[in-house]
Image 1 (tube, rainbow, N blue to C red):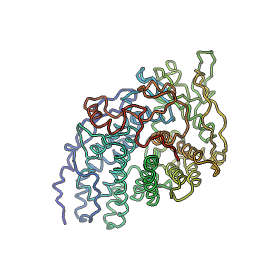
Image 2: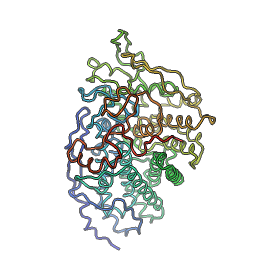
Image 3: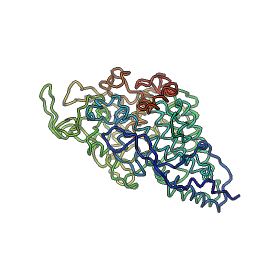
Amino acid sequence: MKLNILKYALAALPLVTFSACMDFDTPSDEFNKETDVTLRPEPLHGDADNLEIKDVVAEEDFPEIKKALKNDLDMLITAQYYLMGGKDGNLPGEHQWQYVYSLTTDNYAGYTTCDQSWSGSFPTTYSYKRDFCEGPHGRFLSMKNNLGNLLNNDLTNEMVEIKAIALLLFDHVAQECTDLYGSIAYQDHKGNKETNPFTFNDGYTIYTSILKNLDDIIAVFDNFPNRPSWYQTQINQILQDNDALTQTKSIDTWKRYANSLKLRMAMHLVKVNPTDAQRYAEEAVASGVVEDMANEVGLNPTTNYFNAHPLKGIMSGWNDVRVNASFVSMLTSLQHPYSNYLFAKNTDKLINSADGSVTDAGTVVVGLRAGLRMESGQQYYANPRVAYSQFTGEDFEFMNIYAIKWAEIDFLRAEGALRGWSMGGTPQFFYERGIKNGDCGDRFGFPSGNYETYLDDYMEVEKAVPYTYVDPMDHNNNIESVTKIGVKWNDSDDNETKLEKIITQKYIAIFPYSYEAWTDMRRTGYPKIFPVLNPNLGDGSLNDGDLIRRMPLPHGDLQAGMDDIATSGIEALGGPDLQATRVFWDNTNPNF
C-alpha cells in the first residue's frame, strides 16, 4: 500500500537553532547556557520506545521516505560524534573532551589529575564545582537534540533498523549519565520534551527501561536477514552514509554493540539483583557480543582523520592535566608495558620548599596525587606542578576512542565466568585475552609494537614490585604503592583476589575511558588507588580517604532545575544530592 508521505513533510523542513544547556567552546571558561544546537522548528513527540517489526513498506515508497528523513539521518552522524567526544558535527576535540571527561571523571577514576585551579575556582579535583559537573549531561542533551526527532517520528518505523540504532545511541549515553549522577530525566528527554518541568527517573527504572529497549533493538537486528534483499541493500547504504562508529558498517556489528552494552549493564546490577544480572549477561553473550577487533565500536584517528586523541592537547598543549600518581604507581608495581614508554619525565626542575632539595628536569617520572591543592596558572613560572609527568609517545597520541572495546567485553566475561555464569569460556581465558588485546595504542593504522614487546614477560608477573611514590615538591604526599597483586592467573587464588586482578587489568585496558573505570571502583572497590587528599574540600559529605560516589544532579544552578530536583530529583536519587550519596547499584554488599 502506498504511504501518504505528505503528512511527514515536517521531516524535510530546514534546520533552525534552539538554545541548549552547555558551552564546550572555551577550555577554562565556565559554561555559557546559550549554546546553539541544531533542532527542528517543531520537535516531534511520538513513541520512541516503539520498535515495530512489521511488513516492509513498498519498494517504490522507500526513496521518498529516505528523502523525508534526510535531515534526521544527517543528525545521526552528529549524535555519534557527540557520544565520542565531538561537537556540532565535528570529530572529537579538546574543548568537548575536557568538559565531558577531564575535569571530573578522569580525576575520580585516577587516570589523570588537574594541575591548575582555574584562578582559584577549582582548588582540588574533588572540589564541588557544579559547572564542570554539568559537562557529561550537556553531552546527553546534545545527543537527545540530535536524536529526538528520529526517535519520535512515526516515519522512522518504516526503516526500523535505523530507529533501533538511534535508540541504542540514546540509551548508551543515558546509561552513562545514570551512572554518573544517579538519576536523570530519562523518559522526558527520550520523548523529546523541551521545557521544564522535567521529571527525574530513578536509576533502577532507567536501567530496566534501557534493558527492555536493548532486547527490542536486538530483536530488530535479528530479524534483518529476513527482510527483502532490496530493503537490506537500502539499509546497508544508509549505514554506509551514516555509520561513523563501526568498521564493518553492518547490522551485525550494531547488534554486537547492543549486546555488549547489555552485558556491561548486567554486571553493574550484580549487587542489586544478581539473578537478573546473570540472566541478562548470559542472554547477551549467547546472542553475540564484540569479540574481535573488526567489531569494536569507536573512532580511529588514522581512519577517521582527526589529528590526535583530545587528551594530548589538553595535557601537552594547555597544561591542564597531568598523570595521576596512582596510575604511575599501579603500572610500575605491576611492571606493565606502559611503564616502559607511556610516561614522560618531569619537564622542569622541581624544588622542595621544606628542605630545599632540587629534582632536575628530565630525571623522574612523577604524577600528581588526586585531591592535591592546585595552584593557579598553566605555565611553569606561575605553577611548577605543570612540570610533572605527562603521557607521551605515538601510542598515546593515536589512541583509539572506544564506545565498546573488545578488551572490556572480555574482562566482563571473565568476571561473569568467575561468578559461575555461562560466558563461553573460563575466567582465565577471557582474562588473558583481555590483557593481550588491551593496548591503548592504534592497533589498526600505525601500531607501534611497544606493547607486544613487553607483553610475554608481563603475563608472567606473579608479584607486584615494591614502589613508593615520592612527591619532589612535598614529601607529605609520599605513599607506598597500594597495588600488591600480581598479573599471572593463579587458579589457587581466592575469588576476591581473582576479581581484583580482573578489574585491575580491565582498568588498564580501557584507559582512558574513565566512566566505566570509576563505576568499577565504586561497584567492586577495585582497582585500589591512593587515598584522595583533601576530599572534605568538596561538598563536605566526604571523609578522609573516601572515594567520590557521584556528581550533583544536573541543572541545580538554575531555578527551574532546582525546582525539578526538589520535586522529583531527590526522591529518584534516593538520598541527598551530595558527593557521598551512592547511586542505586553502588551498595556495601560483598562482591561474593
